[in-house]
Each structure stands twice: as C-alpha cells, then as structure tokens.
Length: 169
Image 1 (cartoon, one colour):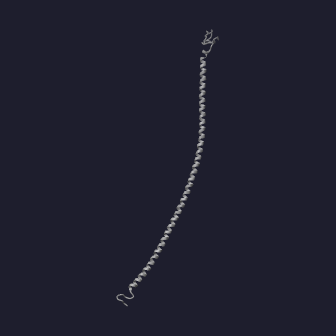
Image 2 (tube, one colour; image 1 turned 30 degrees about the vertical axis):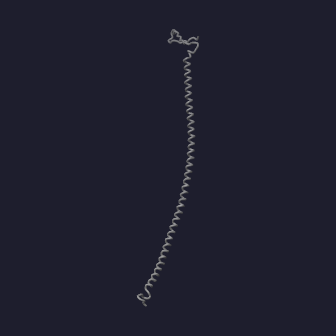
Image 3 (cartoon, one colour; image 1 turned 180 degrees about the vertical axis):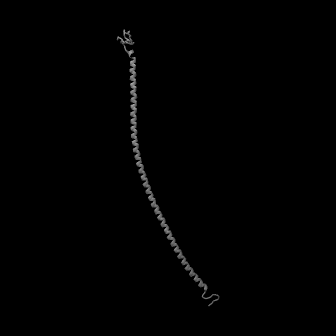
C-alpha cells in the first residue's frame, strides 16, 4: 500500500528506529567501556596512593632511624670528649705537680747558690780581715812600732851569719 510516494511500512521510520536502537546499544557499550576505564584508573590511583603512603612511612622510619643514630653518635662524642677532658685534666694536674717539684728544686738550688756565694763572701771578708790584721799588727802593737833587725858579726870559723832575735823591751 502506497500512499503517495511513501512505501508502507515506511523505511524512514524503520531506519530511524534501527538507528535509535543501535545508538542506544553503542551508548550502553560506550558507558560500559568508560566505567571499565574509570575502574582501571581508580585502581591505578589507589595503587599510586598506596605507594606514596608506603614511601612516606619509609621516609618517616628512615628519619627516626637517622635521628636515633645521630643522637647515639652525639652521646658517644660527648662521652669521648668528657673522658678526654678528664684525662687532660689529670695530665695537667700531673704536670702542675712536676712543675711545682721543679720550682722547689730550682728554689733550693738558688738558695744553695746564694748560700755558697754568701759563704765565699764571708770567707773572703775574714781572709781580708786576717791579712789586714797581719799587715797592720806591727803598727798596732804598743811595744814597738819599728821592728829592728840586729846583725851580729859572724864568729870566727863560721861561714854564714847568725840571726839573733831582737831583745824584748
């Protein structure tokens, strides 16, 4: 049955219905693919987030480990410095004792040197006084201020002159 130039059943209506049905099927297929792709992307993002969390956890743990190691190293260094200071103080104290010993010895040596110098000065002064006394004794003696030597003629037959002591006045 033809109504004018349009055949019955109208192919335009059939074509439009078929196209609408195919488009709906393609739409459904496209949405399924998009949903599947979205699920894949979500899984990837979730995996990446998990990796970031694991990395952050490892970084935190590494930082804690490093802090512990650094604290231990600082404590060991402090302990070593403390021991070194103690040893140095002991060595300085020993040197102070040795320095004091050397000072005492030097003081004794200087004292001995001063004593020896003083002793020599006293000895020289006494010797000078003795020499002065001996030299000045005849002039200080009240008995005679002029010593006289008396010569006696040599007796016959003697070869050397004889010395006779001077008579005491």
